[in-house]
Amino acid sequence: AGAAEEKAAAAAATLEAAQREVRVLQERRDELGEQLAVAREDAARQRDDKARVGSELAQSRRAAHAAQEEVGRLASDKTALERALGAAQEDASRAAEDEASLAARVVAAEAVRDAATARLVEAVRRRWGG
Image (tube, rainbow, N blue to C red; front, side):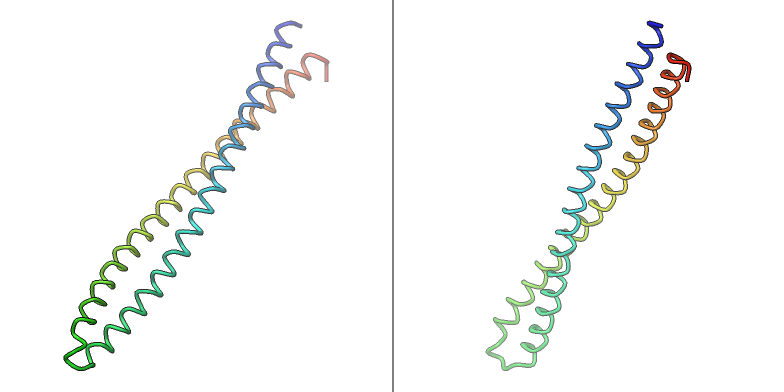
């Protein structure tokens, strides 16, 4: 009887640990989802900024010779925005990969939890004749 109770206690502890791990992973997944949403919003804003800068650049090139300094500034802004857009897209990609990795870890943790639950149920059945 003592061994069955120990097995049941060990299975319950494993279940609790698995459930804690699932909660931690779900919280991390939620955080990464929020980060991904922010990164996507930033990327969208930067794409809009890039399009705006490109339009301003085309207009400035048609302007008089005096507008050449403005054209140079806009070209520089466009390059900076393209770099920032690239970085934001990389961040969004990494966040999506992290989210997918965490989702897989959640599935694995849930499988451990389910196995621990099954062991616990079996230990209780053996102990109390269920």
